[in-house]
Amino acid sequence: MGAPDPQLVCSRRITGLLQGLPHTHRVHSLTGRITLEALHKAFKAVKRNRGAAGLDQQSIKMCEANVEENLLALMRELKSGS
Image 1 (cartoon, rainbow, N blue to C red):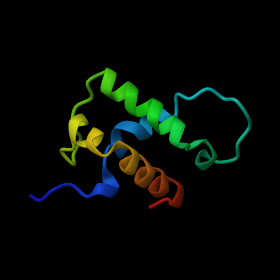
Image 2 (tube, rainbow, N blue to C red):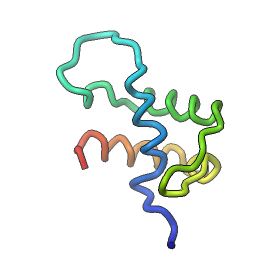
Image 3 (cartoon, rainbow, N blue to C red):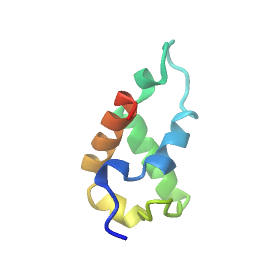
Image 4 (cartoon, rainbow, N blue to C red):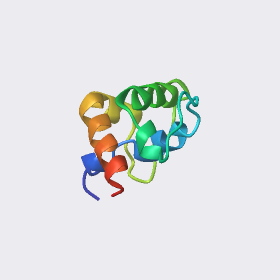
């Protein structure tokens, strides 16, 4: 099995944490709540909890190596619905 697709980095760990964000304003879809700041907070929570690698076998250490690029890619993927 090859290296995990960078577009899938950390998505399973972080996506679930977005649901726990405080409701600061009314939104009509979840895409309005997907921000880089929210993804950074979610990643830090996963790291603090020592989240295990998901199906893609992407470790926290691997994700952290390019965290900004990985989170931006994740945000684009989540917002596009792909």
